[in-house]
Image 1 (cartoon, rainbow, N blue to C red):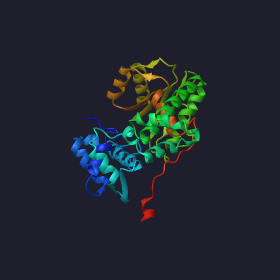
Image 2: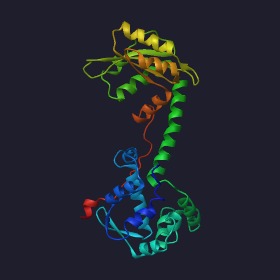
Image 3: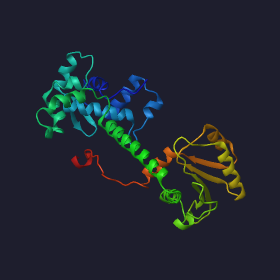
Image 4: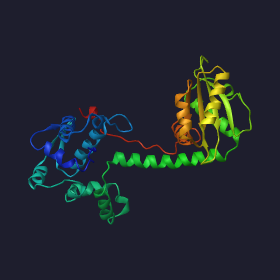
Amino acid sequence: MAIPDYQSLMLPVLSAASKNEVRISDIVLSLANELGLTAEERAQLLPSGRQSLFANRVQWAKTYLSKAGLVEITRRGHFQITDRGRSALQSNPARIDNKFLSQFEDFQKFVVRGAQEEGEDAFPSVTASIESRTKTPDEVMRDMHREIDTSLAQDLIDRVRSAQPDFFEKLIVNLLLSMGFGGSVADAGRALGRSGDNGVDGVIDQDALGLDRIYIQAKRFAEGNSVGSGAIRDFFGSLDRHKASKGLFVTTSYFSPSAVETAKYLSKRIVLIDGIQLAKLMIRHNVGCRVEETLEIKKIDEDYFE
């Protein structure tokens, strides 16, 4: 089954806390068992890698319940149901979600607190928005971040395609150096093949001591022009002539299925990086882009209050 969204987990979380004080980690485990989550679903992590997706959604369900006054935090990692929470359960609701919580004044204040600058009329629109939200604030934020990066990636590739061929050479060198490969800019950029063919062949040391080298083929193609299997075989032959064991083929377009298949079964290791992967690497290593703004996400420091 799919991992339930955080609103669907509100009623199970409240029910699990209906008797005694409970620990959030125990609730995560018991609900995962109750819902029959698979090992893969339990192990699915947030992009940060610090918490499982299911645990994060249980945590947010508990957070929203506490904002409505249905549960209260008792000590580190523990919470318990309140009288208001017991009354809510006694009404036998089919579902507890943001719409259900909106009946409580405490929750209403929580919802509009972040939008107070919009004035009193903000409440209906903000409430409608939060009632229809199935993703946690963490997930919404990451979705927006992913959307921004997708747009940026397309802009980067468009700029690279429209730049001069020698700019593409410098880009590949800067990217590989930013990724931690050894050697200097001059060493990394020295040409091995012909110039003026809308690409550049180069070599870069894999480590700072130059114990191993990676040979590079770069093709700056327009969108829609794919790299075929013939180009991969030609590159393989070039690696053979240089007695090289590994190569990197970079393009601003994409590799045909036959090219991918060819690279997979050749005797030398050839890594293929298409336009999408190139843009992602540029973003990750701040090549051709920069950090415009940093948003810090903070949480309670439990040690401080102990």
